[in-house]
Image (cartoon, rainbow, N blue to C red; front, side, top):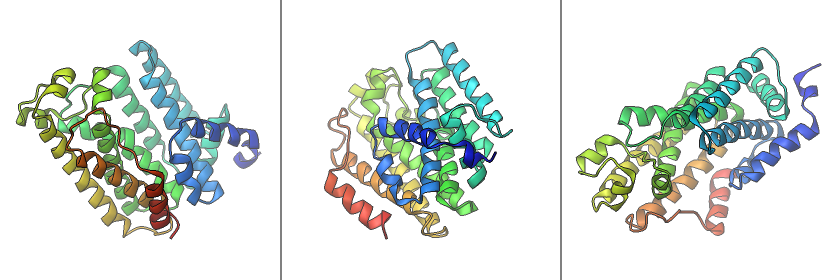
Length: 284
């Protein structure tokens, strides 16, 4: 029996339900893809959602690490052609159809384990970059293959865009993360601005906007690199990447426009702007 036959309509509905339940714009963004590629992306997203929930859940670190280890076993099983539920069956078909790489899945799990094993506070630039690579760029490396481009340039898009998106999320969630005792701002930037490497103290410090502006500049550089590398890729395959880049760059613009005056402000785009971006970057 082929993998395609193993993946039932109910499997696909179950995977799509995970995507819909997340309540993000991801579901709409993937509508520009052909069915097989869209289903592969749903499977990748469902996998990421599950392991991310493990890292974020209220549980002992040892429990989280155990659950993530179980997913490493699932990934190894997938590359032996074995699947046990709707998500892994959908992933197996995606792996076989689009030559998704084992290491990229393992990198995502390793990124989630970084959050599961410790409360991250003021990581070094090197550690923050590794974290962004694992939790975001590795997802991008899986995604560009599902989009239809497995070239080195597509991997470079994933590297840069993943970092840009993750840094934007960090900037958008700085207050929410601090409430959980986390601070993903780099230690070097905090030290240069004499901002304490403590979540609550950093949030109250008058020089924190300097740190946020500097990190936003790093994100902008990654956005620019991603856009340049997209020009070397298959244009049709890069439709979803262009849409995500434009959407998150617009969110970063909204954050910067506030001057970081309200750190609880969670920037989002109005419906009309999302539509404009879809028309400009997704459907042309």
